[in-house]
Structures are given as structure tokens and as C-alpha cells.
Image (cartoon, rainbow, N blue to C red; front, side, top):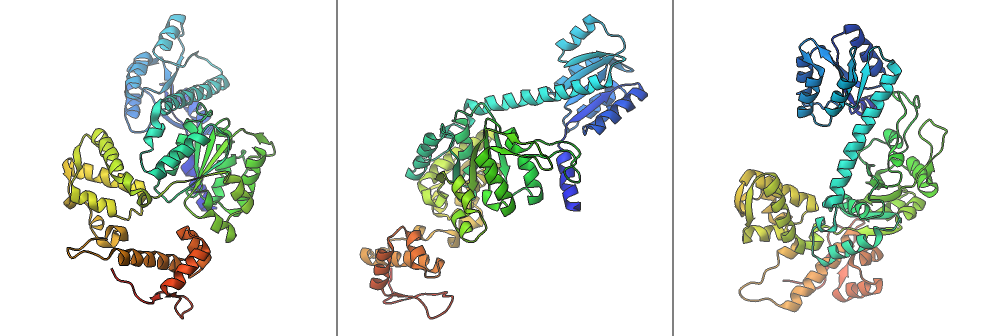
Length: 488
């Protein structure tokens, strides 16, 4: 329970921050108490200079309640100076000497509203809520416009390999449908980027894309995060909270790491997807939504179903249109394109001048195993751009692991000696190695090994017999003996 309270405190830290600038101590205290009870973060100042100091810090001020006449200057002058520091801050002007001319002037300077003292405290509270919502709407519109101007166009998914072109074709086909999509792929392959491309190229692009990382949110909070909660539903629920499903109404809900969701919550998610309705935690009112679901996973959900860790009915509800994102080692031909792409980005954003990659360094990067996929490549280029700054990326600029042959894929170690090579023997040896690798991974289950190699089971069995590959006489085989041994 203590951990839950700490997590809830972390959520509250993101609440709106208000500044009260008022030299009347009794009014200042009354406003502070009122707004604190409404779960706002409230700071106060008596003078113009105190207010400017508070606004000059790193913390954003969402709304300022400002008296028109302050001991050290005008409230209207304060509005202009704060606007230069925090351009998106809203203002409500409070004064005991209100005139139409002053109200018009305050509005032209960007004040949301103008109130003459004495004023109704509930009217002020309502105005504050409206001003905060107005700020949020402006921010969302700006964000939406920037995204729709090309941030998630297809050309931002970099790759010209056949496998990536297949992914792009699939995105184009499914974007305009309302069907549920399940994006599969290893960590770092760009599943979220694909989800964004689907949303922002769909008919729902004008509405919101709401992401939820099911693996990053503790299970005791995830239900509230998805469906919201009512005041008093649990300890720390001091007000009603809208869930991600409701926020995504009319748009798309992106459920990342869906395989990490608890079985109990899987049942509730299945119902919400099937019936398009749910009840907030602790509530009785049913909320209906029109939401498209895009889910992503880096685990084998079919295996999770077999192991009893994931509901079969939910899996089939999510797996309507599966999209597999290949790992970087599956599309090595995209590595030079990605290197150029990231160098261009970091040269611009970091003000650097990386001109290219030396052939020896490019060869090492091409044959590296890339366990972190595209994200690892992006991080590497950013690191080199910052540390090197200018010139050609050399082998000496690469961290040691990129030069260590233990991290290089077997396919990158093949070489032709000066004396030549027996082509048929080399191919036969490589085929043996692939078959043995698949058999070892599946504990010599021929059905599963055939699936890994994309072979018919009968074909694999014939190859095993022909090559004389035998399972060891141990329960958990570690090594495999081959008769006769092949050489390269």
C-alpha cells in the first residue's frame, strides 16, 4: 500500500501549476487554500519581482492570477514580461479598480479573463478550469499539426530492403481500416514508429493517438490508467480520473508490451475491445468509446498462450492483422541507409559535421549482431557524433564491442583464403550449422526446428538422416556429434 501511495504522489507531481500574485495577504491565503484543495500545485508572490523570479525557474507555470496594482509595478507589465519567459502561460486579472478600457487592454496582452473585486470564488474556480483546458487544447492542436505535417509519414520509416518494403506496403493497406493491428518484433526495431505511421495515415489522424506501455506501469495502477477511476475508489484517489480508453475516443489506443499485462486485466481488456465499453475503477456508470486498438509485443504471444500466460481469446482478438518488424540483422542492407539517416539528423540537431563512415568501420558495423536493433544503431551514431564532432567515422571511434569478433554474426566471418575454397563443402558445412543450431534451440524437437528453418518437417528429417546428425545420449543435450564432420 505504501508503494501505491508513492506512485500516486508521482502522478500528482504532473498536475497543473498556478501562481497567485496578490499583495492582499488574506485574499492570497484564501485563494491558496481553495486551489490547493482542487489538487492544483500553487505558489504565491506578493510583488512583481517575486513573481518574475518564480517564472524564471525551470518549472512551467500554467496559469497566473495577477492583481492589477502591485507594490512594485503594474500587473499588465508583469503579464508582458512573463509572456516573454513562458509564452504559453494563461492569465486571469484581478482588480478592485476595473474599467472597460483596462479589461480590453488586459485581453489584448493575452489575459484569458478579467475579474473585478469582490468576485464570486466559485466563478473564479470555474474560470481557472476553463483557462487550463484552453491551454491544453492549444497545445494538443499544435502537437497534432506538427505530426500531421510529416513527422510520421512513410518516408520516416527508413529502409529499402525487401522486408521493410513489405512492412510499408502492409501499413499502407491497413492504415485506413479500423481493424485491430498486432505489431510483432524485437525491442528496438521501431514498433511504436509503425503504430504512429498507421494512426497518422488513417481516417482517425485528426483525433488522438494515446500510448500505454503495459510493461512500464505497475499492475495495480494499469487498470486505472486504462479505464480511469472515480473519487474514493482506492486510497489516494482524491478526484475522478479519465482513463486512456476515454482519452483515445475517436482515435487510436496503442498498447505497447501487451504481453506483460496480468491475466486478470486481460479479461477486462478483452471485454472493452469486444463491447467498446467499460466502467472506471470504483464506478458504476458504463462509458462507451469508439477506439481503434494497435498493440505491440516483443515476446512470442503464441508461446505465452500455450504456457497459460496469455488468454487465447484475447490473442485472437488482437491478432486480426499481424505486422512483423524484422530485426536489423535480418535486413543488413538497410544499415548503410540508416547510418546516413542518423548522421544527417545528428549533424543538424547537435550541430556536428560527421562526413561518413570509413570502409573498415562500415564493414564491422555491417556484420555486427545488433542485439539492440535500430535503437542501438541510433544511439551509437549519436554518441560518436557528440564525441567526435567532425570527420569520417573510423574503426578507432567504435566502442570495443563493435570490434570484438564474438559479437560478429557468423555470416560476417566467412572469408576466401588465397588458396581457394571448396564451395560445395563450405555450403554443406553452413547448412549443417544452421540445422544443428535450430535443433539445439528446440531441444531436438524436429517440428519446432522445421518451423524455425521454414522447412517442411519431412524435408528436415531427410536432411538429418542424410547428414548423419544424431541427438546426444544425454537428457539435456549441449553438444551434437555429426558423422562425418564437415570442414570449411
